[in-house]
Amino acid sequence: MSNKKDLLLKNITDQIEVVATGMLTTNTPEFNLRTEAEVSRISIHIDIFGAKFGLEDEIYLRLRSLVDVLFDKLKNRRMANKQ
Image 1: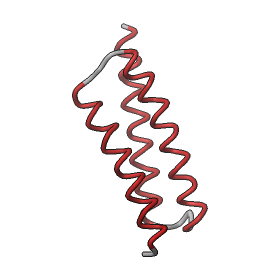
Image 2: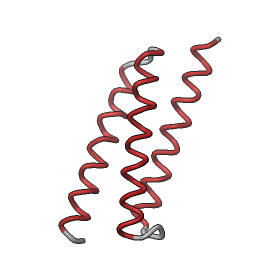
Image 3: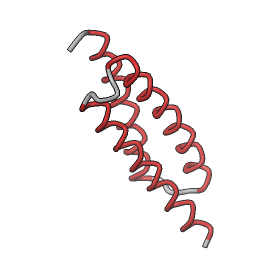
């Protein structure tokens, strides 16, 4: 891997780690709303990664899948908090 690819990948994975850790400890509507915005921002970074290094890159596909899971978890939380 190139240094640029490594740096971008580390940045993305660090952001995902922060979000996932927060999701394990906090479940309030305000936190979830901020977290949805953060996951959207991470999603953009993942798309930039895919554009630079290939949308068929296995790392890109795994990151995209992971961010989709985070979005689903947040959506489920939102629905549960509405009830």
